[in-house]
Length: 403
Image 1 (cartoon, one colour):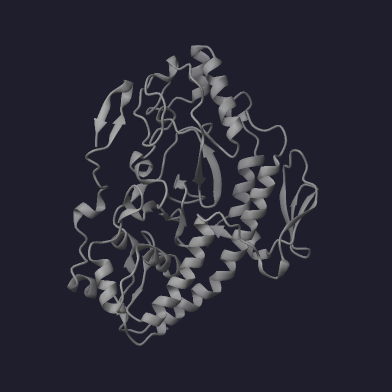
Image 2: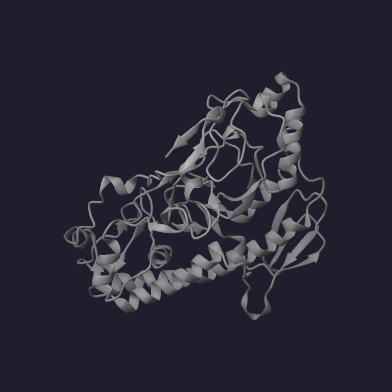
């Protein structure tokens, strides 16, 4: 039971003050699980007659084939009207769609209604993004996730959350933490903390709030070290920037036990055999916790499969996709099952940490302590992106902007 003297958790929005809204692509075809299909869609679009090109494009109020747009930071794409474009497809980039779905995106601003250039500006080596899942009161799932890929921030269900870069500048520079927070933590814990330790703590300790994740803080060094160690494991599973693949303990690696069909249409789970069934295809062992892992109340594996097996609209650009299920998708599915199983196994430790925080006799850091330390209220400038005064980017129709 929570002690009556325990301060309330702090809103993540006050710990990592700068946030960016989810991307709004506005059309499905520039994003997909297969990069070759995206290049084929681009070629088909550019080969179409003008009227058909507009129909294929999926016109919105924000974008038409005649809408010029600035280059996305870090990308080399055209900035003139797409209706006059004749060049090759920009090289697709790997992004995180929703919570766990790694897909490809054509990084051309002319195709995207709201691309959030400020996110692209700070993406790259050294960056990690904290991602708030879609807000759906009472829904099952983690209150906070993270990724090293650029996330689109789209929820599986509910209202979109926010994307919070850990660093405000490219190259992992200038932590996106409330000014003075690291000093306040150092004073309470007796040692300087790194920004990734704070993010790890947030992953391990975050709780659901009505307007976003809430994070209890502590000055108890033993609890802090316990939580940051758990957070490091979670962050590695979510970001995996070292390239190493996760493995389940005890040799319980999932395998393809029966070949997957060329075009599976149904995903089912056999709890008795711990098997994931894609029509007559069979993958096992798949722990029940991995099968039932949910974000914002929606099962992750269902959403992942639907993106690859759902029937697209005939004649649309989305209908250009692999004729048969690629081997790469099977490999990605096996790794996703492993990650979900390992994350689910850490939920018990997250619950134990929450109970320990609630039962701790003292040492909590609440809003009053952070106000006395000058951390709260967060200055308005910390909630805005950093300016990059020497950074040039190509604007619409080849113009240049100084940021």
